[in-house]
Image (cartoon, rainbow, N blue to C red; front, side):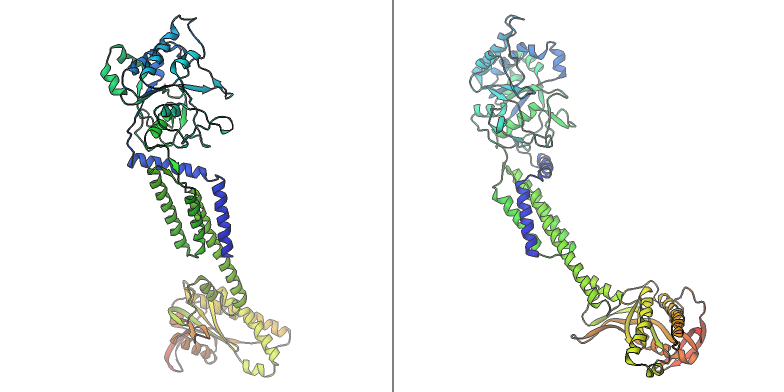
Length: 579
């Protein structure tokens, strides 16, 4: 059964690996890991990307619609051309037609800027798609001036939760590869653009230089500012509006808005370029590693552990997986661990459930097999593991009861053995439940007599009170039992009960091969003698002062003074239910 559990868990682990059911958990962990790494282990950037942005303020400065920003974009490209920048990308929707018919010479201003930039560095223009997924064309003259491999799509791979975490160019129909803005810039700079996670632990959050500010520097010939801003860097120009073209990201890349939930698309393109131009995209670890860890997690169910140990093991597995995944991420590798943790949870939890079911089945079997041989209190302690079945004992404060049927020997002389057993079973069939209902433990049957303990093995708030109430209930039952006997023509019975309280030793007494639960000590001897004293004093119930002093209700008790008992010093006793 246990081996079958491990096999089932392995199959579940394989299914979880094949179907990305737990991918959202890995996404959440990945996002948190990037935040931690950015705070404590931020990777430096050798090949930096600078963002030139235009936003609401830019639109107030440039009064024309963005479609007619030819002079501004052309001026920007001309300004960057002489700064020593390594490449420039335009994350801008360029028009699909000429505007020379509206403003003669308008196209030339942008064409001149593209040509000036192209002579100094690679230039890549953005391609976009319409709502139907069709490519929005760019006016052919702009593409021709930019040169070969100078256009790339701005689409980004978005995960199921709306967050951009990975870069791929498999964005075409049926997963075909298409050139992207960041991919084309990387290739033009001699780097490959494959698939992988964007490294959000590289570089600080981006700030941006307003487009109008770059044009102002260029207008006054401030070459120093231009070179300090762009020399040796890739330049991306794009929208940094407060609400337009925003995407979810694992971390906030916008330094100017620390509370932003989403970031402008141009910042994501810039972070992709950072990854491609520096340490590369984050790649998954070898396929066998997660599978090996899942198998190891499934095998955790081989061991049967106590609940606390199982919980500590699961916490240790979770901590180890998170730590290993974070270290791997810091080294540029992605190790998804949600499947591993869940398989460990299923494995350890399943084993705990299996052991619990087996233990419950065993307990039910023990109850069925031995429930009639020991009192419920003893059985509960055994099943709970608090009562050691090995020979030995523990000291307890308890109240001991001895009960006996008067004249039983004479009565049994005229009865057949079968009648005696039937009579005793009818009597004990009601007396024993009374003892159990009051929390008592039946220690032994002694012919027609009973020895019971209250407060051992299960502690009671007031053992003496429980024993006294049980004794009174037994006396009340005998009256009803006598009514049944008289109705069938049988002689009535009378019983005597003795109660004494004190410290005793309770546990299993005997040999290793045969022992039984009992209580021993002076308190048991005195209780037995007090039961015998009932014949002399004429009371059905006799208890010691040690018992009476603990009672909440002493109504009906009569002080009988000290009485000598065999083998013991005189004991102060009280009687109840005078004959």
